[in-house]
Image (tube, rainbow, N blue to C red; front, side, top):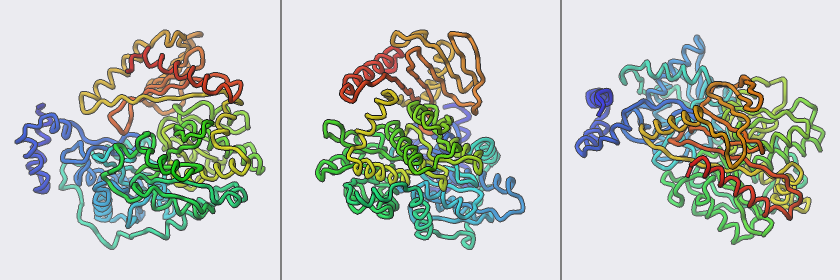
Length: 576
């Protein structure tokens, strides 16, 4: 074991840590769990695209009382420097994960011990409601304890700034610096000042739902289709607190909640991963939909910021839509209805991430709506909203990983509002005599069939992080000249902020923050993106291919062509 790691372990064993923590470290030593100890202590958890996230357990690289306490103390110190002579206020929420409530209480204790006013949700609540609460109470910051859709062994700590968005530069780095400046846990104030903590709950639900009602555009169609058969699952998470209420408020009267997944449970007993991107996580919802012949299926992840859906396809079978397809439907509907209702004035815009389908750009362009592309992470969409506030009107934002935001009263992806608008789109389509799948195929015929896929390669621990770094270095230094028989014509390197046209040799500066992302554009319009995850031990490869679609009858044939193209690309890049 490296000496620096052993020194950290000795610090924990000799420091003012509780006996339970010390005994767990000693057990790992007795059992010679060298790899586990190394992974637990080789670094300190850092803020990625979503804040802190990691396995729960002892050690500086684990989610526990002390890493949460240090993060909170560092954040408290930074807030005091950033807002001198002000009564600082923060809001705190937590999801259904094991230890989430405990970590939220630790966070509240440390903030209050530092003289900071705390608004603490007394029960689990969705992440978007935390963003809403920050804005409602004019807080300076906020924290939600969640690991989103990660496996049950994980937890996390997302930090928000005073506009209700996740922290971005320079605040993220500055907070980390403050955390790193804490040399001893004795510097962390754990003793709560109860008079500084205010419990909140149902009153914020009502305010949030009132705002959500304002995004609805098709009240008449919902009234006509109020008995639309909706199946919903919170996948043992926080969605159960607000999604049924949101659907009821919009006027839907026929919502079936998947009973087996309705109760919040941090062990997520019915799924391997509580992630609506996973087919397994959606299986119980689809089964229930078949039983009752539902119109639409929706399922949210544990902190209810992502939603997956299933609809009936042209073969009358339930089909899961990916995040790009759902995003395409949402944008198509919103832009069409805004136009029909005379709400488009030329100052409206939408936003999406650079790895989200370019089909959305084409829809926006044809309808005279600006489409901005930002780095992966909804904090960058929130940054645009902050920049354009009072100048332009935000319609919606999306990322391919099942996250969407409609309206501007929240500044993070919001599965509650997304469920409401997706149900509305289904009702609107049914009232016009067609399905969501029909709508999607019509979009493909008009704009071209864009098909996306994603491969995530998991590389755990320190060795995995090094392997991911080596893969990115290889693609940067030795990009492929041909992929699937097509020439590479453009490379966008977001780490080095340069886009290179390989045909003309021209280099263009990328006007976005630096990020470890590479994009390859091929001569046939194929786009390949490589990005290490900021929240998980993974490297992700995104593939986007497209063909014209002459008619809906050609869909299956064209789909196979595109599937074959993606498989060839994966094989050429040796990713399997």
